[in-house]
Length: 368
Image (tube, rainbow, N blue to C red; front, side, top):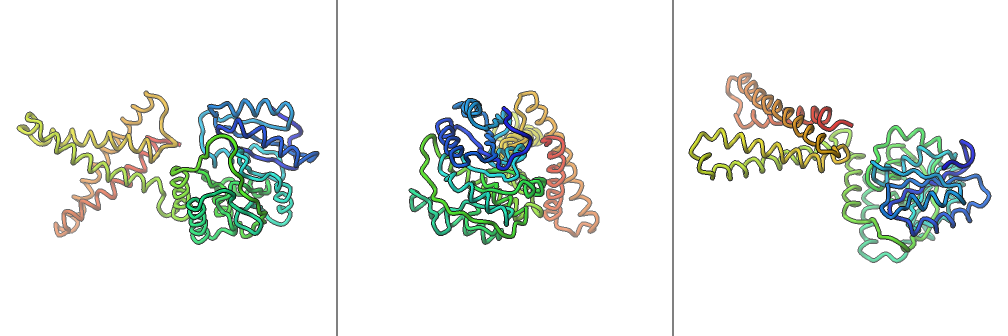
């Protein structure tokens, strides 16, 4: 639903997933704080099973709320980026819908943009706090914050915060550089945008009132992956590392399958080539399944026909890779008149074939 003109003073982006109980309270609070200011609330919902998007649409009858229901996309960071892209305000604010961020500091965050590109709501400045957090959660958060600040040199006491504001012009500059994943989009904005200084506003992290916390091992894994991507991604893409890990698992799968197949009397009595070929087929199948679920998770096919088509492409690419691996090893041996160690030549062939397989699979098997 559309409200107002094409531009406004403040856009508050609210990413949601299963926040039906919290969203009406948050919208009421923000409306009371921003009062008669020219503002809009941009709710980006990942098709919540509890109908958060429907609640947001109902709220749009009384408040300047715009609702974007994402059917085929998931993830907090990408939801924030989609919301910032759709926002009309000159000042862009991001706040969680779980009522743990204090909307009372929104005007101060916006005021801070007069002299800074980014303003951050921080739990770790004077006057701020983590509320009812237990000792283990606080220790983990402190350790992650310390590590991130040391590794990426971001200019804030709370780089993991999900509560921040930025100028529209700054977002437009940084947007093409972003690769949103996981939960910590502020960290990527500060790092890829080369933000030198930020404005800080302290707040106390509140206790969630409704729904369940989304903090879990997946959040930590996504955070670690984002750090790798920002720190080493240009030299060694994380997706390629994952592909190599799955390839290593595939070797173990092939050897295990070969061992089991050789125990079958008919295969044991015949040439080992049949058992070897079947073991390779098992390894290719397992590698495809694991890469589809993990390495290329965001690009995997959602229908059965596409899945089988991808498997066929993967098998063809890997077959050419095996031929390349063998050919490279032979060429290396011939170029050194047989002096190169056969195992070293084989390893070199595998490395070349792995790079080949990854490049082609990325282009033809998992497009996007």
